[in-house]
Length: 110
Image 1 (cartoon, rainbow, N blue to C red):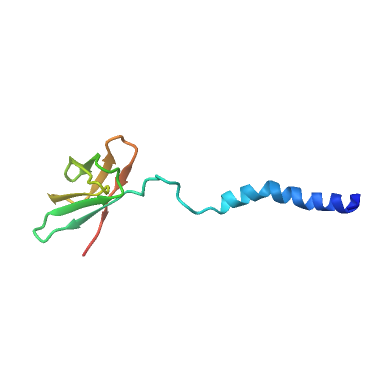
Image 2 (tube, one colour; image 1 turned 90 degrees about the vertical axis):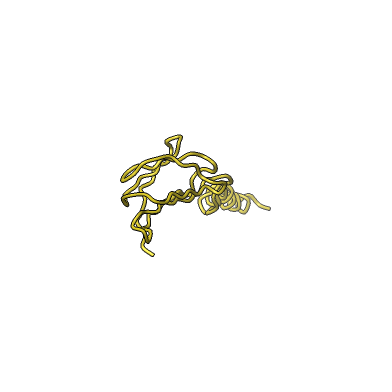
């Protein structure tokens, strides 16, 4: 191969090799293994006029504190879910025990 062809191929190949990993990393849409799901919580009115507070996506088996119209602490189950029935009021904020996650709960109507 003559020098002109070799120089032309080098000019084309080197940038492609340098950009390949960066482009591949940028296009990745997978979630990192072990990443926590996004925590959410909701409030709904029960038939007796009280409120039901529930959340999903919190750390498994850890305590969360709810505050607002009522307050207290409850543990999440093995899937990161919690439920609290019989509350008064519909406005709540839930915080994880480590303080790393704080979520304002949304009112849902069924």
